[in-house]
Image (cartoon, rainbow, N blue to C red; front, side, top):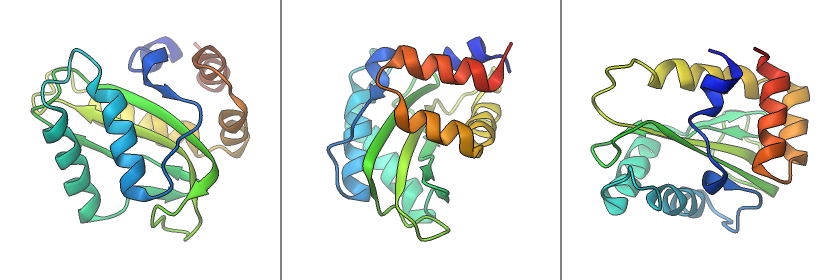
Length: 156
């Protein structure tokens, strides 16, 4: 997956520089609301319910300050990602017990004919697992800066 292919799932409207939420459920709600403003999301309530249900199966807090809540929903017609950051960190029941500061919310339709959901999830985890990239994600102030970090991390 090239950087441009990866970045096609993101948008300036789905970039949250500083989360207001202070709890795990607040993060899910805040990120879902941003995603629900997208024309490709049909039912914001269903979307949030799916994300909460998926999270109840096990935390998507991966450790090292990263959380990747994700799932498939009939509320979404296309695969989309919201990027968000919390400078103070939020308890997300991560595997290492540390607060999460960098979040990627992935929502995909049930019918994934292009088989993009799992490769995208894998690429996010691969990219965010690098300490140098996590530090850069914490410093980005705009979607454009986020794109620059991704291009530098993934290359072409």
